[in-house]
Length: 321
Image 1 (cartoon, rainbow, N blue to C red):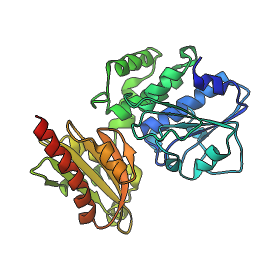
Image 2 (tube, helix red, strand yellow):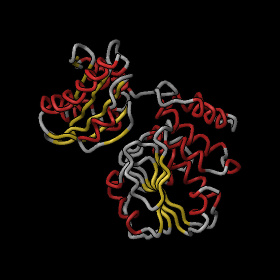
Image 3 (cartoon, rainbow, N blue to C red):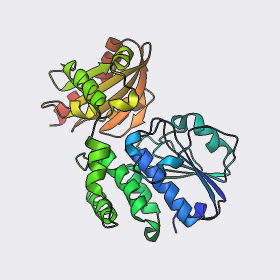
Image 4 (cartoon, rainbow, N blue to C red):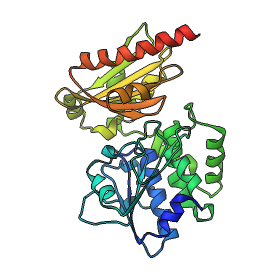
């Protein structure tokens, strides 16, 4: 029996949390955990608290049960998923503080081990992959499998990123055997974009700039651009990944303006640059090839600060070739 199951079996009330602005891995893992907890502990009060979960994940069973407000409840067990530090829980951090027991299941190399119990596997492709290893396979039905599969495809870029392993593919195969509509999951949650999302993507790509002899590239979406196109942060998914695939690019940077001179930064790399180290330096976190942080200053200041760290790694990489 895993540590997670041991803690579930003694809890009468359970709250499930993920990071702010949940992505596919976060949303999929949280809803998989919700379904699993309901099956294992039928009499327990189980709640999922997340804010701004993209509507594209509405096909996941339990999506309509997500709550986005903070109350005065005190839960026996708090389960944190896909969240590397407690601050990224946002306003729901209070549930972690109040809970009688807590466990974090994650795969971020920057995870700080902030819960009472921590199951962190930095080498895993996704939190969904780590969570799968903690669950009783007899309780993983088709709907739970769809949640886990969603988490895996989003953090592996549909099995394209270097974090994908033979174990990842094996787990994906097991989930497919439950009868999930994996083609629909991939098309509708990963590739399909609205007209406005396509417009802002085009705008961001049109204005991208290369530097460091073409090895790096960045683009920025300002708040006035988001207002003009009628889009929000959740509509900007995938822009940095498109930058990463441009021929000759090792490191891609995408920024959008959160407030005056405050930018949310997303970074991706292909082979050499460890962007998690750079993000951690600026108070963020993530993975070796995908990470992010929040930075203040002008666009020039932000790119300059990031480029110094990137170029050091590029130089070190070239010296080791």
